[in-house]
Length: 331
Image 1: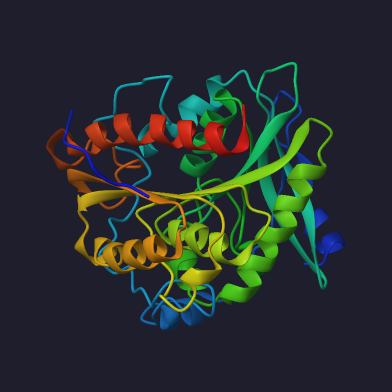
Image 2: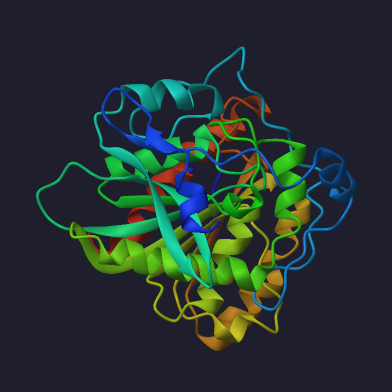
């Protein structure tokens, strides 16, 4: 385990399938979730509730300091094909991608199903699988853009929509903001982990997949990805982007190697690093982390922020992510 600090130089299925149809001119399938269920008044009344966590999840997290994602930005990050897009460039990157992406429905047990965005790498051999866990803002175009970049780097990327069963309004980015944030606060952490178990098994069952999977998550999803390392004994590797660590009581269950990537201007999350590092070090577990000076929370999505520090963090963190997965999952 190393502590690295870098400077500024990374519904039932039948109900759900009623609106599952053709999405793009490449024949990519799309499932549209019927806009019903959670009413706006109920959602907004939940907005003040702390993010519940449960046995394998991090400590309670209000996420009140998160920058709200914007549908577009005046200034875009440089379009570097070696890096994921930022939020403003995600739709353009997806539209230009040569890789095959599709919406699928994954049965997760007990009458549950999830929709997920799956992107395949262009390669002649079987590929490892990486699950991509969305932020508290839901499965956005930006998360799908991150999945596409993972596929560009040689992995089968699966981004599950953990709000599928909430019946929120459909659309690539229409759920971001208060609706998604409040709905995520109602998710049971144990249920979330079971959904990810099923998605991991689905991924490894794909004919083009190796029997190995890893997980990466961002913000809320970063905490979920850290918790998955404590929950899933078959997990190959976890990468945590600015997500809080599990409680010290859960850390002994961590088996998979964990890479943490954090912004230096993110004290709420960074305060959970030292206890996790000390506990995992004493347990002999693999936990490597980097803190990028000057970078803020959500630096990979907002690459133009913090006077260049977010972009510098992205340029360091993403290669570290790919190297981590290649080391522990293979290539």
